[in-house]
Length: 268
Ligand code: THG
Image (cartoon, rainbow, N blue to C red; front, side):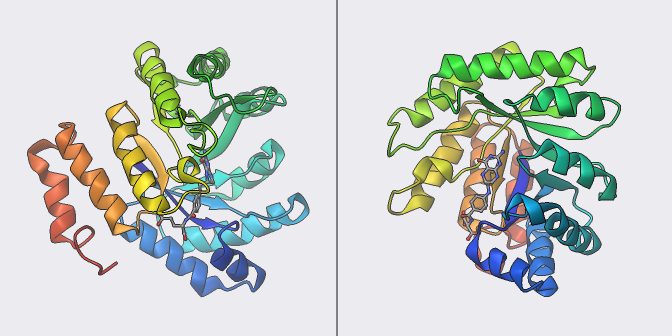
């Protein structure tokens, strides 16, 4: 499982406050804790209005890459912002995201072709976010083909099949699961990722639903998640599920995470 740490995001109120106050120590702490909890990438999202997004991302990324060696995942809906920020990032990372919307692939893929940057591809297009698994699949297939036409290898792509909200779409997980199973069957080298919290929007005890979703989605072939790795209950669920899916030989990672107190303790 490839963990993308979600916590440096200006849409979280405490982080928004830290950004507004230019509280460097707060951002450093988020970067350090997520890195210590095993994040493979650190998502950085300014969560601000477009006019100050670049400046905010520049500030955030400067701090994050000074604090941790973990590669960065640049989270912006603007291709221009992403292209502006990439040269400032020391280590090859990930961009979040492209979709089949507004010519984003056409703008970004030629620029990314000669790099090793990884790319999150959302299954939405100018028609919005689909709930039908066939539409999710078709959009994924279109983006994968556009990437290949630019010489971008499949294993650089992380398809986010955009899970819907169970409150409004009772089939949210079932559709997500059907879509990713089909994507994995046709394109086994493509990675599958997702945020864990969209599914539970508006529900009480959201973390129970988010955890259940993580487990079921892993069983359906999801091999990455945009999540809070400092949530040790969630992380324990991830490690335990890897054991059950025979994705952790001799339970080595599970036992190591336990011994280090990453799971099963409230130390972190
Ligand atoms: N897909 C892609 N990118 C995304 C999302 C996605 N980027 C933004 C978002 N969704 C994922 N990021 C967050 C960031 C924070 C929270 C939820 C999603 C959040 N965090 C709680 C906190 O920090 O207080 C803790 C949650 C927990 O403990 O589990 O609410 O879907 N491609």
